[in-house]
Image (cartoon, rainbow, N blue to C red; front, top):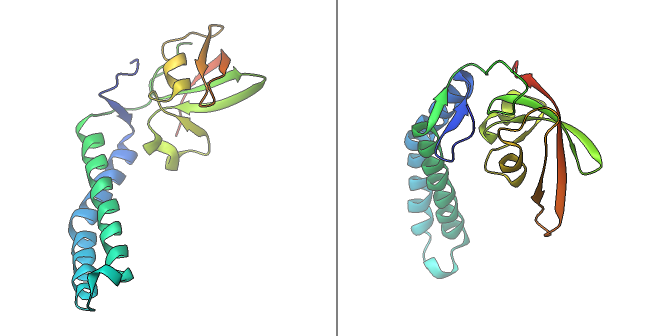
Length: 162
């Protein structure tokens, strides 16, 4: 399964964790922040009320995370990691020479970072876009944030064992 910008590969564990986080945010945490905002409002002048402004900012972060989780869950593909066949696909562990350094990482959604000690590169990252679908021995390049071109060579592709 090569990366598609509208789908996210997740393990069942990651999917369940996101569902639980969504449930907590949309029920318990939303109620808590609404109460905090109301209490801060009662403290008087909203223009100079730091507690009120902090609570409103937190409410914005909560709502943004809820939206992000909903999108991820709606567009996720929940399966076991694919068996590696030498091609970089979502859910594989990649060893690559990136510039002068060799790195080993998981090619997957950043939602899987909590399931591994490996660094995770998403298919939406510049590196992820460059290596998606490459085979062992293939080379590509991508543009770094500073505008320089970075060469990458796929050296190994393994099955992710979580």
